[in-house]
Structures are given as structure tokens and as C-alpha cells.
Length: 461
Image (cartoon, rainbow, N blue to C red; front, side):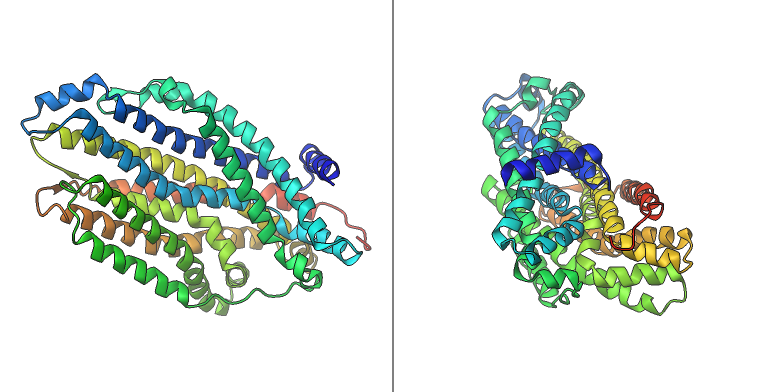
């Protein structure tokens, strides 16, 4: 079983008939690359905590305020790195899970056929998990190689008043193995959960049963999380709180972001429902698909939702006049945010690309049938872009105000000692770049659609 499944996965990569397996490898490579950047960056901050650079001590000596030690200030960077990890872990792991689900419908049909001819549910799941793990391992090795190639670029990044050296971004060997292990485990779990319907009822896949409607409890959980954060931040001071308080606030921010991923699919479904009354074929097709698969639509744009949150969060970044230490920290926080946004952009574009490619292949039969009925290619293109743009605007309508709320409340917690920069232009530019990137990624699936429409199918296939 293991040998057969491994050869089957490697053969699919070489032939690349649908293009999905190569895209899955690319997605796993990006996931590994970003996971290593986040993990090794955190390890770098821990190392500088115990061995602060001399430039930081020089800035402390020039400050008119009384600070404890360079180690105490460096410890705050570890806290900020943990908060960044909390923000990035959801979109990065979602990208890995999306790569594992890539082409799940086509695989489900093949495995459902094996179930119907007598293969057990355990054998079906094992075969698919092994195939996915092979793709994941190939992508992870590629991701490690890409991370090694990016090491020289870190010498242009500065923290603590000193530029990084490439060696500082290389953490302990076990950290790399741990990241690869987490990604492999995530792939196995995502594949197993994605094939649960095949194991329970293979006929459910063949009959294309409609998924259950989303429940209102998602909205309740979202508002509860926001309320808990607002209550907790009332007793928080950005300038005077200790590391434990920062960890609690960071955990609550991560919780709020997680609940955004819960409520996002329901909001997309609600916004798309009135659009089914349109007379525009592309809009109608897009709305129908969004209503039928809101979770897939959210995975398509979830990365940009987090980008909108982070960009809005930075609008209110504060500064303190005549305080070189605090302003150094704010500059370093801004650098960290720019890196976080770059990672988020890459996650959003890759997620949109793999999900749109999966949608195109999963709906191959529908596309072919509509084409034979006379539907022009422009309708499919219009529906493809609407399937991305409508969820984008819907999720940004939640994440951007939420980011503004969280950022302003943290600034207000300093009780008037901080001055906000109010860089609204930065927010507009980041969102515009993010939307453009996602739309370009959505258009990149057009060659797959062309291959589907130009392939001859025999009647008995």
C-alpha cells in the first residue's frame, strides 16, 4: 500500500495532468518557507534576549529615561515575536490545510469508486494520506531549500538598532524538523477529515449531496471574543504592563482572529444570497457558487482578511517625543509588521491560486456542460473574478474595522502618553496591493480551464 501510493503520487507530479499536484507541492513549499521564517525569527529574538547587541545598550545610555537593562528591553521583542506568531499561525496553517485539500473532490470520486468495489474505509484513507504526505514531503524539502536561499537577504533587516546576520536566522536543527513534522501532521489530518464523507458514505460523493448550512453560533462566538478583548484591554497599559500581560493580550488577539475565520464564511453566504436575483450570468454563477461553498470562498480570501487586520492595526502606531528607546521599539515593530504583511501577501496570493485551481478542476464537468450549452468563456472569467472580489470586500469590511479597533484601544491604554501616527495612506496602499495580487492569482487558473475545455472525453469516462 505504501509503495503503491508513493509511486502514484510521484507519477502524478511528473505527468501533472491537472496541474493540481504541482500546485500542491508549491503550496507546501511556501508553507514550509514561511513557517521556518516565523519560527527561526522567534529563535533569533530569544537569542538576542540573552545576548543583546551593543547598539541597543548605546541607545539605552543616550536615553533621558531610566531603563533597567538591555535584557529587559529585549524580552519585549520576544513577546512581540510571540504575538506575530499568534497572528500568522492561522493563515499559514490554513494554507497548508488548503494544499492538503487541493483537488479533494476529484480524489474523493476515485476513492469512492474503490470503496464501492470493496476496499475498506481504512484502506481508502491510508492510500490518500500517503499520497498527500509524499507531496508534502517534496514541498517541505523545496521550502527548506528556498529558506536557505533567502538567508543572505536578512542582512538588510534591522532590529535592536543592529542589522541581522544570516547566521542569526538559522535556529537549532530540531526546530526545522519540528516545523516539517507539524506540516506533515496537518496534511494527514486535513486529508483524513476531507475524506470522512467517502469513508462514511461513498454514495454521498457520487450523488453530490449539498453540505449543511452554516449555524448562527459563529456570529455569537465572534462577538463574545471581541467583547472579552475589550474588557481585558481596559486593565492593560502598553507602556507599563509586564510580559505576562502582553502574552494575554496577544492570545486574545489571536482568539479574535480565529473567530473572524469562523464568521467569515457565514458573512460571505449572507452577502451572496441577494445576488442570485441578478440577470447577469457571471454574477449569478458566482453567487450560486459562493452560497453553495462559503467555506471554500473564505479559504480563497482569508489571507487578505488577515492582511487587512494587520494593516489597519498599524494605522494607529504611536510614538513618544524625546524617547529614543520607545521610538526604536516602534520602528522595530513597524519593521516586524512590514515583514508580517509580506508573509501575509504571499499566503493570500498562494491560497487564492491553489483554491481557484481546485475550484476549476472540481467543476470541470459543470464547465464542460455549460460550454456545450453555448455559455461563452467570458462568463466563466467574470464569475471567477467575482468569486474572489465579493468575498474580499466582505471580509475586509470586518477585518479592517476590527484592526482599527484593536490598534486604537492599545494606544488608548497608555492613558494619553502616546501620539498616534495615523498613516491612513499606508492602509489604502496595502489593501489595494492585496486585492490586485489576489485577482491576478485568480486569473492564473485560466490555463487549467483551457486544458479542461480542450480535452476530449469519451462517453464512458
